Length: 139
Picture 1 (tube, rainbow, N blue to C red):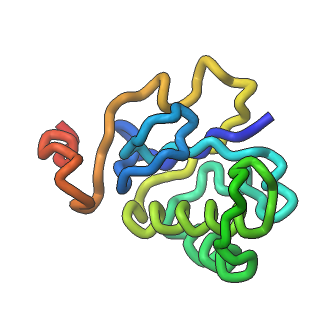
Picture 2: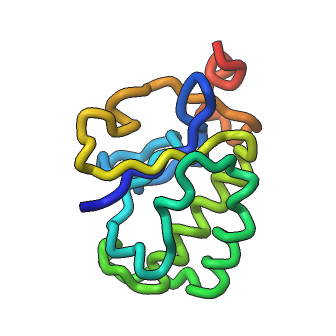
């Protein structure tokens, strides 16, 4: 099993710089990431659930520093570097969206995974031209 980790506002998923870790195989600007539960031996990702992003920055940045961010070629391998890189990316998302709230779900809840159920994207800050004005304004 794995976890779906997303960063959300009341009306939809937070916007972040383009990444390819959302489990779709496509580049996305949605703050959604698919993470192996094997990563849990290095960082307790489920404990992020329900916390406001700004509250988690110290733990995420500390884990990234402690574990390092050197990635293995196999993203699914639960190495310290892979987990540290994941923490670093989540920390960046939290810094860009400090008022958003983390949601962590098991992939056993496949009918409620974030990228399939909510296509609205909201940005707290202007991240790139990839996010349209209507999305930034929440309209």
